[in-house]
Length: 315
Image 1 (cartoon, rainbow, N blue to C red):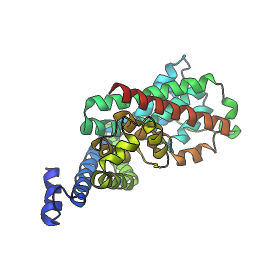
Image 2 (cartoon, helix red, strand yellow):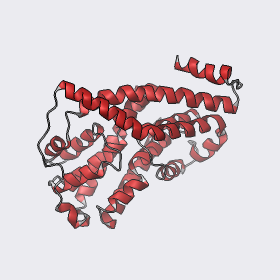
Image 3 (tube, one colour):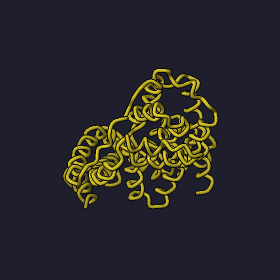
């Protein structure tokens, strides 16, 4: 129905020619914008109800168990269901550190929270199928867990700014909501999040529409095709400045895959956009000293590149 509506607007009302660059680009923009906002509204509302059972205080208490590697796994899994992008996850990251959660465990959360986004997971499932969605969540969790373990092994607590250890974040009582309160929270959260992310989604769809309609096939084949050995690091380098949440980058990912970019390269690009943003680096520079900040970005970048090459090789 949405596709028919987009076709009617572009090719009947506006009168653009089917198959033309402008017609295909505008049709892609209208159709994907409607589809993504419909998916987002439904998904965010449902997920918000689930999230209401995981306030920051409860999350911190769960992560305070210091069993070897179990904390990294729990932190990565909890990162999926917490409502944070790479920048907004930083305050809770501070709370984890000052409450005694091991540093490596906190980094597993900091990586997983923006990278393995449940909205993006369900949207990927709808757009590309369950195999691609499971690849996305599996690789994201693997990167978060392994990177957190490596950072923990390096014993770099001394490179956290001193004031962080003195902060008291999220130590209040756990608020228990009844179902009515959860519905109210979900409605408020859905509207609030849509207000925040709609520009990213529209811009993302716009970029995707331009790629869909105007970028030649040979351009992407040259820079991001399977035969280019540097496609993955190039995609990661291009993804870092394009700060967005996972939902906002999905339209670009969709267009790139339609143009023939290898799945591993696409996943690497998406992970770089959501987990290695420049605004996140600026915020973290006020929390972490340069050696730890460089180590964090270096490990995550390396892991993402490896994931990209791995899935280009097997798919």
